[in-house]
Image 1 (spheres, rainbow, N blue to C red):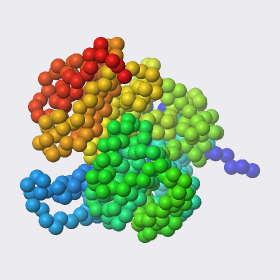
Image 2 (cartoon, helix red, strand yellow):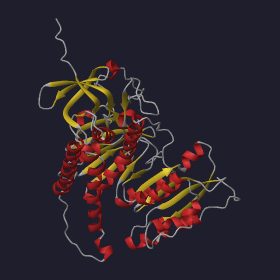
Image 3 (cartoon, helix red, strand yellow):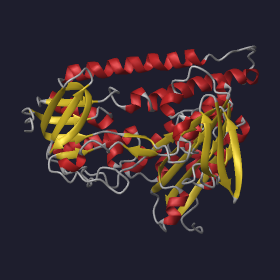
Image 4 (cartoon, rainbow, N blue to C red):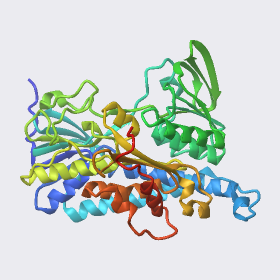
Length: 472
């Protein structure tokens, strides 16, 4: 005879995963007096403060400081025989993470939301069984349930790759030594950021990518700058290469076999970093018994309000197929929050700004030229080298450009790209103008402080062709 399940504990809201969207939903609703519980398997606050956004930028900044030491003579400073101690780089990062975790715990306590450490899986509609981290189980049922399980690095089924125990960004940020020769699989955001950082710490670095160029979805001029960056810093780039097999053990000795233009190539190194995509964490959590459907790519199927196919169940963040940025997950929280309060907020049509924290930074909001051409949208193009912004000369950071796409029938800004120092800060001003529906002339005619990077928007928007000129 089957033992009956214990009676579920009832909550107003059960959140599976404490990532960006889930934690803010929990804190907000708990402060309103709702009974809220958050189930977290391991990382309090999710990936961003523990193993992703903030820790990686911490490490990248240490690498930037290392690059300044290498360039010290350029700034008139002598600093001979400097050494990089990766254990101390790692310790700085760990100290920051510890502080962030403490901050999250304080927020949970102040909000009244309960944090439950353990692994959760659905055992019925809106009902989750939790295998507690310290032993035992609990069964929770929520009037409302939020799925916020995130994503993980995709390790493709290439013969020998899993057996080689490659690094993902998680392990790379925990290294206490400098890899002799790091081979990075993937030339996207994560691959480029960490490849440059490790090169600046002293590793020999090779990037291998299946696509014909780095950041292949972006405009060619962006790829050209990134290729130049790699060449100037001594990073080898191998594109249009399809991995066929891997031998050896990462951290010791590895050999990667690939096909390129019909011929086999072999790359040898000491470490492998996998940075070639993300997989949603939706398997093995009982979605099928909860009536929650998934897409053919494994994401939770949601509508524009982030509602799943099960009544009273929402999904947010990476696992719901939202663009994989923490700031988008935060907006997912706002969508759910407002709709629970009776509003009608949707995810369609929202801006998706982003920044890749290479050096120089690459940031964009709105349309790229590639996207505009694919959609048949005509535009006026303005573009200036970032060295035209005088602040770059004071910093000796002159690589890159600013580029804007302007509507042909009006003065509306369609898109903005910045690749250069402080690019992630510059795009914010243009984004606000786009949100407000301001014409580009508002930025062209603004008075910006001199000498700042934002001042570069004046010569950029002064270079917009008149509407009567031939348009792209």
